[in-house]
Image (cartoon, rainbow, N blue to C red; front, side):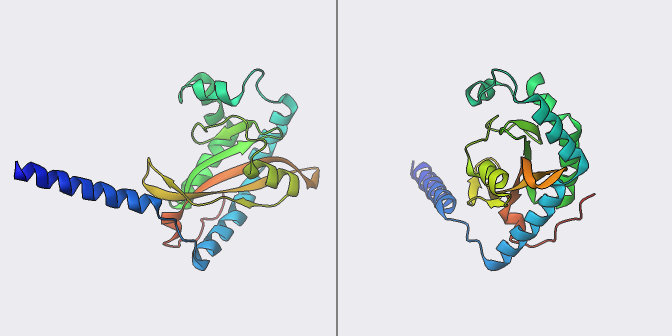
Length: 199
């Protein structure tokens, strides 16, 4: 009985320590921010890739899927035909190839067209439309990169941060036609590795 009580106490203590670790905020030091800034430049290069740009141009001509909103999007299975269309297209394959050069720093990537709808991604996103969120509005309207707050990812038990950059109009570089959002592993960045060159 005492052994069970001791094991229960040990388990509780371990759980409390784990919860305390999760509630701690990841401190973005100057070296970490420098790495994030370097990634912003790299991701901007990705957003300028001709395959990525062409996909956004084509999507802007079509517009969002009729009747698709975020509520309906959440009901779709991760491997449904509707979702697979976003992971199997040329832009998604390009993003996947680029992400593989990141030494596990890139945890996610998704491409939005001009109305916030998805064009391509590595894995199903939580929302179909991102218009109205800072990660979409800031790059699209101000032509500036955007940086989110560090977040603890339960599934991977690591800290990550999102950055977003505009996809520029090939005919007018002073106009954004879409947004590329990329998630970065802060745990990987904390052990600095320079971004691999885009291919």
